[in-house]
Length: 611
Image 1 (cartoon, helix red, strand yellow):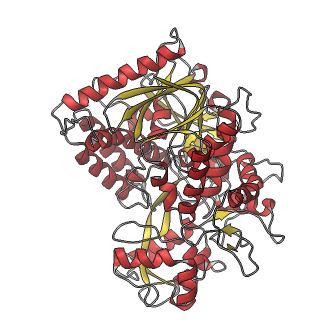
Image 2 (cartoon, helix red, strand yellow):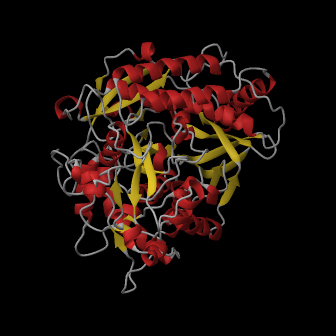
Image 3 (tube, rainbow, N blue to C red):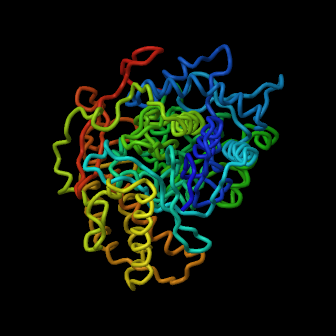
């Protein structure tokens, strides 16, 4: 067993920033990651980092744009923290050596991204995430922070108190991918989950194959509520053949969307009369799909044209986009338009936290895309993901290293409960353990009468039993289960949703759960057994996909990224509230929590969201 003050699970932007902050607070920190940090998916982020740096902008204006983009489902204390603290974080990144693109005067350049009322997106060409990741990793190395890369965290080591709010997280259990050994990591102060997104719940996604919702699923099984899972962002510009992201920076620089008739449809058909291509992502994604469905698409795509920007400007600011289009679609975007279509991109929902990253389980924190403070609400604005990583990664790391209680304005756990979901979730959803799997039917956790090291040791023993069972069993290949799950989500819980489609997806998910109970791992080796890792990841995908579908079924309105065919209006009277799903003692339950609209800058009154 290894012991550190703070264990950070995940080596992407949020995890690296959390580790740096915890170290600066005086803690002995370790990062445990299934990937080497510089291979984390943060490196794929292209658009930039929003920060109010110039006189014509302000944190207050940034906060209002964010709340509006979120369709007013975001919590103001988290939004204002993001917008207030990002300028200093961007300056810190520059001092740490991040190579931002410059304007003609030599200052940090900024451009428009969709949904913003000022040019506030700092960027490093179209490779901002890559530069951010390497800059943060350099700081981790400089500080001598321990990094256990290629260690896959299987579960949290949590006490098994009857009420989740009475539990404490004492560490994690990790599988050493190189050796096949299981190791317990004891956290003397706190654990920070920073495991990223869940895009592999879908077929067509911009996410890496490693984005399997691990942190969300582990926290859920330990008893932490997960919030607003139905709000999944579909990015309007992905390459049709692969799902590879084409940066919003293309449209920010002036790129234009056309249909097969050569029409600039965002204006021609009134989808966004003022903002056009720079309307929010949910608006543009729906517009593209309507064009395709009504026969004005170019196959299953539309055209994104940036030829008019000129070769010099394209190569200066968007060079990697040229290479992506050439490599994956055989198109030279300097000379011809690129085909693009919507693809799953980002999860607005996730592990319920307050604005400091604290969960309802003592000693457990979360930051980045796996967490939901909630800063993005029903729809994330482009350029707000990387600020979330650095601001809330920093906050979570500082709190995990400290014994101080968070003076938070966003309630969590039982304090947040503000009304029950009437639907019987035990009827429409399964449980986080597979039917017929002979696995535990209660929340992950160790006995309360054990000391912290023994809680971790018991969690290691449980994980070892599970791994051995998977390796010894000759059963169904997990890939068959995963493929059916992804297809069901793609069909039923995509940009356009119907009750029948979501119910069909839930039926498939229940079937997948039953089949997962019989999965086995065909590769018996102990070294670099990717089949075993992916089998365990599929279990996590079942949990998060089901939560997305349940939230999509329950929420009967049209808000942000959530569109329902028979509910075409935003209904603030009934639905200006967060959907929350929790699991404990073998059954899922759902309830609502209030949206916190009162901030220091202002109290945000919901208005019609138009662009």
